[in-house]
Length: 156
Image (tube, rainbow, N blue to C red; front, side):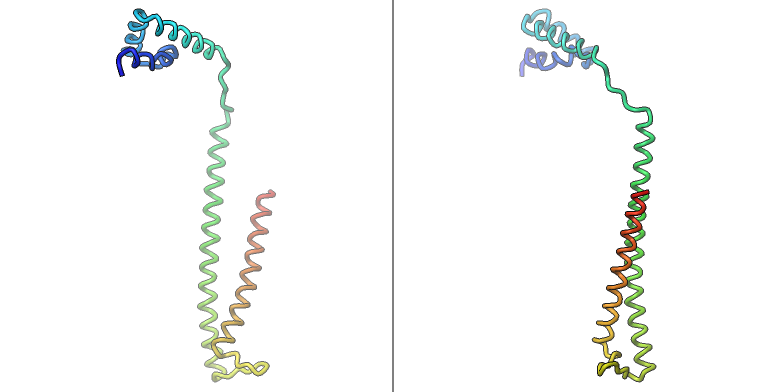
């Protein structure tokens, strides 16, 4: 790229006053000897002057405070979601351990036989099927309650 092309690429920036003093002097010196660049610089200067007269949008005064408050609310919501997730995982693990411990206790106390409707409930398969069904129902109820709580919080 030669000097003419380099200066021509900087004409719009020169008209806007966005160049360093050294680059501004370089553009002005070239525009004095090149009529095409002088005409283009004048056109860009008219555009830049017109833009300076246009009203500038102003940010609302409370924009920073509102943005900060929204960020804090989103962080609190994320923290609450993490807490709920950890709580549910912890309760799930607790329910598994409690089910196994209770199964061992009932099996020991009943001597390995607890017949209901012809099914030995202390065998592993029936016991865990029943406990899984109860845990699933409890989990569904908990999810509904948590979802209702979140929706109620949004409505407020």
